[in-house]
Image 1 (tube, rainbow over the protein chains, first blue to last red):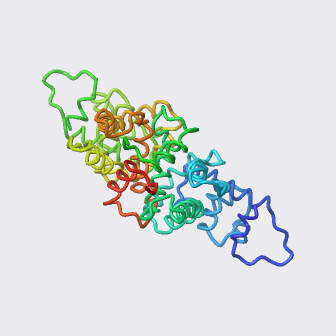
Image 2: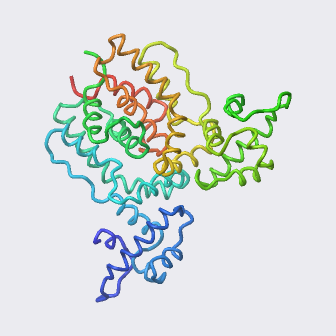
Image 3: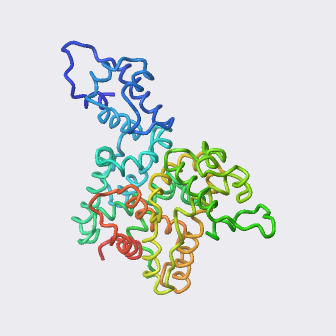
Length: 202
Length: 202
């Protein structure tokens, strides 16, 4: 919970006890409303307060506004970023690819896809989305750069395109069940080996 | 328009003129309602008829039910499948990857992502989605199989995983604008070359 409350920039009276229970109720109410079909544009602090059973002032003491609250709520859906072991580039990539599209909260499957139109319409929502995924992206970028420095990966590697090549197939399978016959458990390894070695006959 | 009406299995009185205008209005009304936020579960023949300014019977003369109408409406969003030239495997894959996530209708950007939760909840919706993408998938599968037969691609190629590897990166960039610095125009070529040759230093 510390991650959620630490981003609240509003001043807090000294000595006031933090109400973790209220924080949780507010985050839960936000996620419930989103999972039930509220768009990020339509959802309001009023509706969240009513659903959480708190006053609006309680929310504004913790978050400066709707954007900050949404960011924290959406981050809790994703859980903690994966931890690469720092072993081989291949092993680290398999860990990171395996975490793509994996959410700890089942409401994510309803919430995340419908965020896409909002993300594409609004620079603020796009920034919010980038802000949520950037910490995970940074982990993968660092593993790829390490591979280039070590001479394992091509010196002219396009790191951002390579990240899309590693992330995209996992995401379409996990989110869209792109093909019913693909086994999700072995997919990260197949993607990483495919991207490392290519599919040409040799 | 023939593609839309040809899937209507209901009998039509001989000599009755097809009302292309009504067909178009019904398809347009369906897409408008979806783009405005109606879910595929909630949308009704009643609502579509009211929006199109036709009677329900007019819809049922053309489509046996909601599923068939949705399928035709969603197909019109995607437009015609791309046409690979039958040249090199690389060139054909670039054409096919370039068409991934490309829609002729701007409402697609609002409609398609929000279909995902419905697709994941309902076997009928999943079948509808597979039915829409399968013709495009079949084109890519055939190009890959041709490459294997010609000895250009690995004999042990996992065709379905390879298709996810080619499609996924394009889809996340085009639908999610996954990374702001990636150039969509050159991405199909980069993905195809990356998947063909791999990223290892040689």
